[in-house]
Length: 249
Image (cartoon, rainbow, N blue to C red; front, side, top):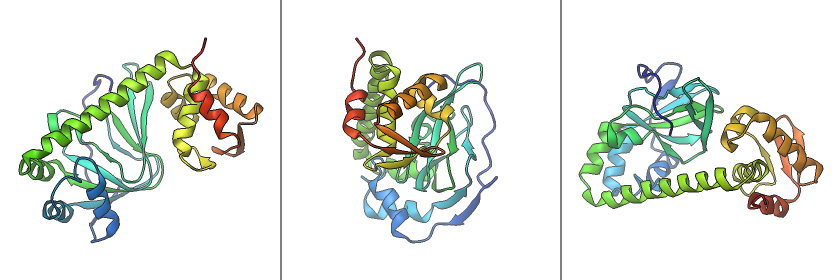
């Protein structure tokens, strides 16, 4: 994450959002049970957290928090997608990650009590599971064996950061673009970019013009087909996979 720039007051928990008491549903339980951090808690601790949680509905492009904000909550995505972004000192945004259903975010401040390290913005209508830091901290402190779970979680993130740095150094823009497209598409042949072209460029780590040039190249080669605004079909997955790992001479 980039250094903090401007400190801003934390947004209200209810501003621009509808907050409801969390119902007893399998979806919300699954969010708690399958995340790396919370899934190691015993069933009774998870149920206590669930009972203290709320659901929050946010609209497309709604900002959940900004870099530098004070932090007191973490979030799990019940449905929808959320972008994590950082800003340079001159105000330019860089997309760090796109998080989907089941992802947990906003937990970094849970451990260091520091401000938010990035912005979070809904890419579409999104429902969030909201957990208060204090409740999660109490649950973790009651289970000291979770220390190794936390260590593994941060080790995994460090490896992901190392991979991203290696991509930026060793892969050219078409390779990084192919890699990000495959990550967004997953196993689907048809997919929609849940972001703007500018956001995709930030995720690739290149200018929008260079990323658009790579997309045009993939279309000309018959690897990718444009089906509408931000909608694509993969025609040759093997070729894209090969290009995503091709190091320039």
